[in-house]
Amino acid sequence: MLDMTATPAIRFERVSKTYRGAPSPALQDVSFDIEAGEFFGLLGPNGAGKTSLIAILAGLSRASSGRVSVMGHEVVTDFAAARRLLGVVPQELVFDPFFSVRETLRFQAGYFGVPVTDDWIDELLGHLGLSAKANANMRQLSGGMKRRVLVAQALVHKPPVIVLDEPTAGVDVELRQQLWQFIARLNKEQGSTVLLTTHYLEEAEALCGRIGMLKGGQLVALDRTANLLAGRSHQVLRFKTDAALPEGLDARVTGRIAQVKAHDAAEVEAILARLREARVLVEDLEIGRADLEDVFLEITK
Image 1 (cartoon, rainbow, N blue to C red):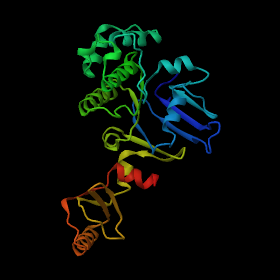
Image 2 (image 1 turned 90 degrees about the horizontal axis):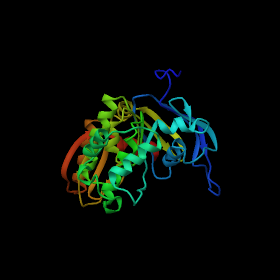
Image 3 (image 1 turned 90 degrees about the vertical axis):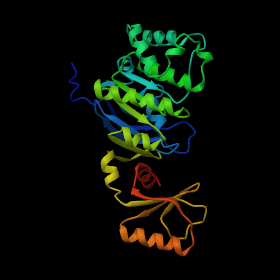
Image 4 (image 1 turned 45 degrees about the horizontal axis):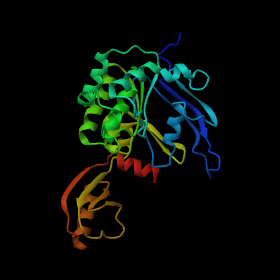
């Protein structure tokens, strides 16, 4: 019998993937473990290889080389056990138009041979704001409601490892809050392992205890979230302006919001002096610490 206290929930061992006709590999020698009970964030820009890695983990694609295992079960040679242990929420909206929400969840559990009670289905529906839609046909649901059903499908067979691939892309704030409260509860109270990919970096910073970053198919960072943030301990000036910033500032501008890096109080005053000298009118000025978005941009730049 496997000793689950010593076996990682997910293990990637020198995983590489090359697609036919592609100019470069999608993944190059990626290795890391996710321990049981972790809330782990996998980040990277578009095309970094996140979805390829998850597709290999879920058995939807095969690695060109390397091994992937779920709680000690290799995803190719022991695929049935590996899939039973996983609950995957994909990016794409995939649904069967012939069934109601409740029927969809019952069939999903049946695929894994898991007897599921209506009490558990009702709990899932309640936590995901789907109770009123339980008997509605899947075709009648909005895109946001369909995504909620995808989350319920991933959880209905009570997998110990949950994989969330951009689960809140294009959904409303209410669902995001409901989803994270429920997933955080499963992680804390039931010890579920969670692997999250997201472009909402504030979500990753708030939820993930450890983070890995991919760039160009390679693992370029792997550390606890707190350590990644502590390693970039500079201050940041954030403000709104309609004016062009003086040249030479280490700044990032998104729309009207400017963010300028400063390492100490003297540099903060020097930056403010340059802005005054250039007659840059600023609004809503605040001074804060670097966040995960700053770390992400530094590492993947």
